[in-house]
Length: 75
Image 1: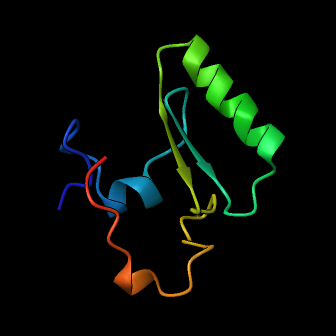
Image 2: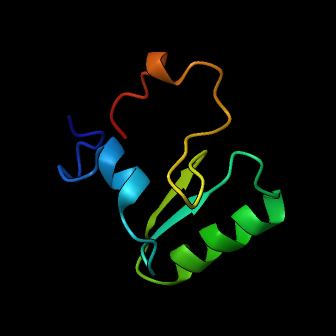
């Protein structure tokens, strides 16, 4: 099931396993606001990108009490 109405390839598997690169970055749910702002600014000054907050570098989802009930809808 795609999570994006703009890009059909983005699903939970993509967010958890896709390699980070110049257009995709994972951030912990405990990310410092300044670090997140720097990442947003970097993507805005480049060609854009996707930031997943709440997914650790190893793909573990964090920052949510019950991951099985998350319904984020389309973004």
